[in-house]
Length: 540
Image (cartoon, rainbow, N blue to C red; front, side):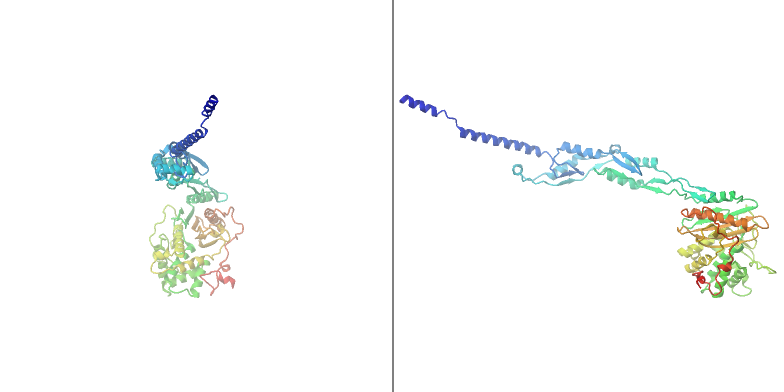
């Protein structure tokens, strides 16, 4: 019995301590997991949080080394510069572009640092209650601006293209446009490129390129076309027995064509422009019906008797005041710029008229050419162009004649009335025959046996108004209008095509009358001369 009892006791002492063993296992497992999470958390603190952006580049979850690499890769990408349709790659390294990544990452690290104790952060990590701090660090970078400016200058030198030279066609009297030109605006381009260099995403720049019109902007091409046209017509513009004198002014730019424009010619009836200007200078009240009618007859019908009466009114209105009026007309014209123009005798009325004259002023026209100009009535196309430009500036800008006479001798309305009056000069030939039938022109013509001329202002629909004055002379007893007028009309058409390239006259007009239209068809009758609306009489 005793031995059996002892045996049973030994068997009970060999049982394993299962509960304590499992308890220790769980404790060690928990400690292992805690250690593992602690290691993970420690590693995480060496990386940037998910809400960190440096220089526009997200670096959340990256180590400092990887973040620096990502930033460098972003800003090492080339910038594409577009010159029109041509792409040009700009390598940032070529201008020494570099980011200050160490300073930016340090700023990002400092901005994301938490003031909470380490173990508190760890327990928040374990509990999943971590808070993310948003950090956005701006770019800090520099480069050599001089190198960038040099590269941009090289691009301009390589790609800029001046506008192509225009040409003309003598057959159609039209102008061909040259190729368009391109010019890079380097001052505007530099800040645009700088912005692209500092942008990690948008690395494209459309360079500011100004396209220059290929239209020939040099008015000398018009001069060359006029010469070529006259040559094609067998008319030598600078010959010993033939002369073509041309003056054209672009009233927008002030550019001029001067083709023997300083050669003295017989003014004929174009002197009536000077008479009209001086009449308005001396005008104190609105013109009476008598004087308005005289003006219409003088400017529209080229009536010499009416012109002499106007000069008599200018001189004082008496039978003996004509000489004073003649002198005043000359003095006014020369004062406003027509220095080679004058009238020194009454206009010829025909028959047995007894002419007298006053001393002619000293002038200095081109002495290389002699047209045998009327010793009592001379002008140049340059002088006529000057008179018309003075009227135009007065009417449109309150300058011109108003500036020449600041005492109130002229008003804008008076200058507008001058242009309105001459716009009714509807001859349908000469300058008017070289422009479209519905185009507005204010002009005054004049001709003698050996010289034909016309001068005025053309008003195209596009607003490019211009002055034009043309005289053609031939050393002969009779220079036929059938020969002279088409020459003037061709020159007028060339000028129209230059200033209105969008609406050219490519062929001479076929609707022109053989001779000039008689003034009774367009001059208002007595009592119906409205200088503010010269054609209003037609509605009656």
